[in-house]
Length: 210
Image (cartoon, rainbow, N blue to C red):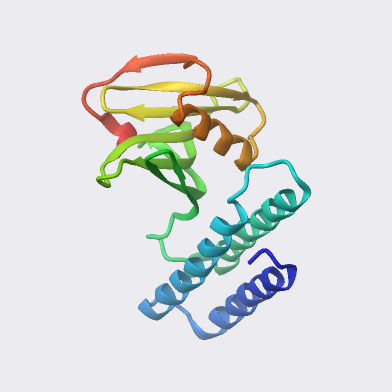
């Protein structure tokens, strides 16, 4: 899967599909929606395979660079299609992996999404949904971006659970690498991570698990 020729073929296929769709479609149709979903489905398979290892060896690094190229190409595809891009597709599956008895699915948003409608100062860029063996959602992690007036962006890995939420790791003003965040999520789920930076209680699941 990680062979360079396969990756190059995928990236070229996306470029060709974009050109074809721009010529064929004037509006967003069901056919276009299904075609985009098919491309996303193939990309997800590649992304999961290329993101499997969090190790620091050369092959793992090359695989992760390949995953970054796919993510860049998908965002480029959305930008190139402009108004043809379906409004319903706001994210894509970035990764799937297991931690002990938990199943984790990661999505990456094409563009930052507001945590609260009408409050643009707190956004989410990634979301990890954690399920137990029964398939029940038990936690969610987010890469949160806050940017209050007069200050620059600040990135934090947050965790939401049944009775509240915690800030797990602070990344400061620089957006972290996906692999770095994945390591922190795995460490926290495994019980080996550092203590939460802050914890707050919210009624029931609140908006954090929506």
